[in-house]
Amino acid sequence: MDRRTFTTSAIASLATVGMSAKSYARIQGANDRIRLGGIGPGDRGSGRIATAQKLGADIVALADVNKGMLDQAQKKLTAPVEKTYVDYHDLLARKDIDGVIIATPDHLHHDCLLDAVRAGKDAYIEKPLARTIEEGEDMVAKVKATKQIVQVGNQRRSGEHFKKARDIVASGGIGEIRFVRIWDFRYRPVDPYIKRSKDQKLFAPELIDWPKFLGKAPKRPYDAKRASGWRWYWDYAGGLMTDIGPHWLDVAMWITGSDGPRTVSCNGGKYQNMDWETPDNVHSILDCGTFAIVFMVQFMNGQEYDGGAFYGIEGSIVQENNRGMMVRYDAKRKEVESWKITDENTPHMQNFLDCMRSRKQPNSPVELANRVLVGAHLANESFRSGKRVNWDPVNWKRA
Image 1 (cartoon, helix red, strand yellow):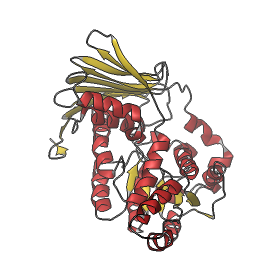
Image 2 (spheres, rainbow, N blue to C red):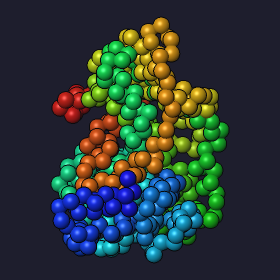
Image 3 (cartoon, rainbow, N blue to C red):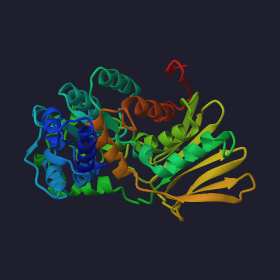
């Protein structure tokens, strides 16, 4: 429901109790458009602010430590922003902004989100919610202490095709789940983030406030590869496991109704992208008590792209990308039904905007996003230590 439809419906309902549209607008501010700011509108962020604008929100300001990214983001918008900032605190100080879309590097998520909610702003924050388990716990506690709406960018929670799969599993349609296989394979012989670091329109040193980029991360001399490919450096993020993992681990937890893993093992390596610190081919096994998850991710060969398969004792549900379908099979591998894969990004942003109006909890609140992310963090711990990691999902601590 867009704002015009929401307002019209609300006014019609209030008319039945004798309240005029004029008094409703005066009391509730029903005719005010949602005004948003974008913080860190780079690759993912620029797409999110453009989607919010198409859904009727006004994008009035942007903040980024990289002036090149600010220029690039504005080109994706259909209307110019009122002002741009290097320091996001200046954007948050504006009283005329209702909410923000945050898509900074992962290591800045914690402070940026908490600064936003303290400033009275609702927030859409890209996944992963936090760079560490401890940061995530702190964010959950402090967001809950406010009245702000926060949607985390695990957009698959808003996909109708996954909701149907969840309903089938919940009703016993494929029997008890015993195994889940999730994967994301992409063909990138040369990482585009490292490759574009040579672009002087985006990563010339004079364009970037490097101390603000580093934040609380270890101090280092300016490095264009780190500025562009921050996802692949431990100082700023957790590589493929936390960049891609939140999406598919979220789906696995949602569809199975699991409260999380008991043990996590992870292995892999760096075989193609030698500039990375994090592995470019990494695989984890999560024991969830009554079933196991195998999550595989690599950026070298995109033969199967991405997908998920849920294996029950009476059937299976498999995402088949070559058909653009989710398919349910019986125990004899006979196709029972299929349904199309639908857009997730637009409904997820719409859900955020709707919740800004209704003050209801969004599809991916911080508590949920933090819970599904723990498996990815534990996988990185296992990879870096070379040991299996034990976890207590009931008491929410390492076992």
